[in-house]
Amino acid sequence: MRVETFLFKGEGPQHTEKTLELAIEWADKLGNKSILISSTTGESARKALDMIPDDFKLVVVTHHTGFRTKNKNEFSEDIKKELLDKGHYVLTTTHAFSGVERTFRKKFGGLYPLEIMAQTLRMFCEGVKVAVEIAIMAADAGLVDVERWIVSCGGTARGLDTGVFLKPANSNSVFDLEIGGIICKPVEESLQL
Image (cartoon, one colour):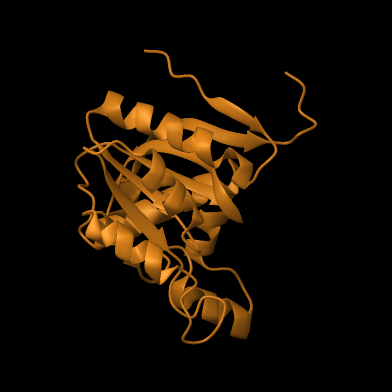
């Protein structure tokens, strides 16, 4: 088997449409017509809604409420309603790789296991970390099957620029998660290939 990885020059939201195009192609190959994406404000979810075939399901994972501002959720209520009305899922919950642990780091300093995992995944790129993290969050919510391969997409700051196919795991068995391959990811613009 040969798997090709599409490399974007630089990171960012300008790669969202191509990431979604590749995600749809790979989800079809895997026979699992569900795609897992991260979306902070709803912009990536809006683009996914416009592109996704009718027989596909979206699982959209947002920042948790209070991520940037107390009691505020950054995700658009209008886009959330549209997703739900069309039978898709929107998950807003604690981040798998930070949550309460981040509070301890901020208050007491130091390094904690979940942050070590997150930093290790960031060695590939921020989007790989996000794609893995949202897969755990969606598995814990019962929105993805931990025994099936799924396409999971994340990004760097805004938009989508990374896609992976993986077999999710619940947080209490996180080391069962398996990354099958990287579909697309950003690389430094200076890289000459």
